[in-house]
Length: 411
Image 1 (cartoon, one colour):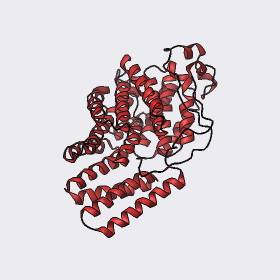
Image 2 (cartoon, rainbow, N blue to C red):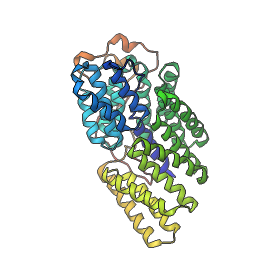
Image 3 (cartoon, one colour):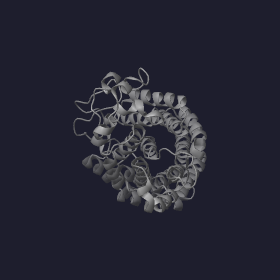
Image 4 (cartoon, rainbow, N blue to C red):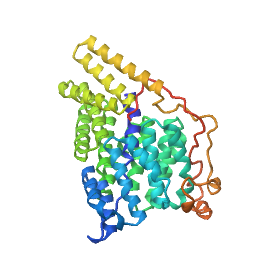
């Protein structure tokens, strides 16, 4: 279960790629078209928002720079959702070089940081987390999302107390705000915290709340609902209740398939297969799911996820009494583990030498990462609550030392 526990961190991180949406306005209004694209990015399969972006392409010149940036953000987020995270990261990095309003900049930082962590770009992930600090006090409802990203990254390096602090602050701000999507993500983050702490009773309660809150957000944030269902599958597996887990994983898989979320499909497939193996049911389907996931994650160069799929294939072979085949898959899993270690694909096991925690008082004095035209004002950096931005992000000052244990992370 160790691999499944750590895998949930990455799954939630990957799900954090979906961001803001808003109700559409009058039909011919350019702003209405942009908001419709943002709404579909939350509530519909990727193909639908991509189709609207294609329809808008001939009229892109009629949009303001800010509107074009919002559309480009959705396009790049969609790339990440369907599995092209490297291209998405390159595009988001270019977008961050433009002048951006603080809420959109923080939204992009949150997405880009999550992608960077997903593909093992740890130095970049922590640098962007640090660069986002000066913008948080003026980011409005987008601030809790960056705090959740800070929680996630601190959890990966073993800073559990700091991770919980960021998650709790994010939830507090989201509950005070008016953005249902921020609340959805904050609740998902609290579930992730409890899973990492192995408090599965608490995690189950948060996952059930996530299903409710994310189902309401923006007329239904399907990927975060699917993430909650997969999370409940994990909770039930930890409770040694694979029959209940089976239903949750099937629901999550179907939801991800409807949305076209390829990473979620393969991730839920591994979870579903693990429950089938535990029950001794539908083992042919379990084999197909695991083989497909192993192929997909090899193509994504996600060696930790490959290791998890291979371990489950070994468990399946053992279930069927084929010791020689089980040994083959265990060797494949070990090879994936070695690849992770050699390539530095896993997160660091501790903070790097020279890492700095910046207090809120220092945020206004630190240079912003964006162009000169959108630097945050010092007076705003001092406002927004006494301790909301305290001990915020980590500045990565050296190359990360990769780590390995028996646990696998999902890319």
